[in-house]
Amino acid sequence: YGPMMGYIVRGILADPQEAEDCLAQVRAKLWERAADYDPERAGEATWITALCRNTAYDRLRALERRRGREGELSPDLPD
Image 1 (cartoon, one colour):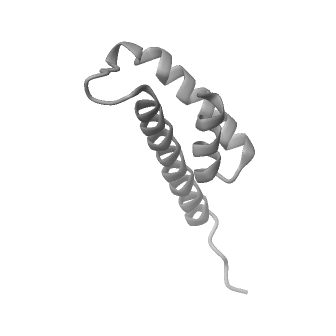
Image 2: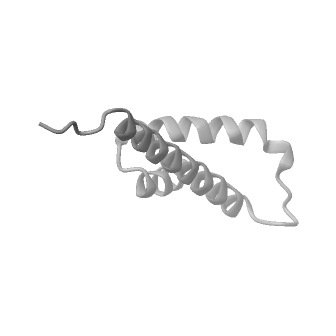
């Protein structure tokens, strides 16, 4: 599922380093949450897709919040 995971994450996160960090986070979550997978609820690919998508969007929202705070900390000063 590696290529599929990369395709999903890179489609959401434009920065290659952020995408790689997110993929590492997804792999860790897959390992930690393997026992949570329920084949009665979804197929493996569907479950992995949802985990990738949600993790990437969470990371994107965090990046946007961080950028917003950085903009607030360094306002343009009048001449």
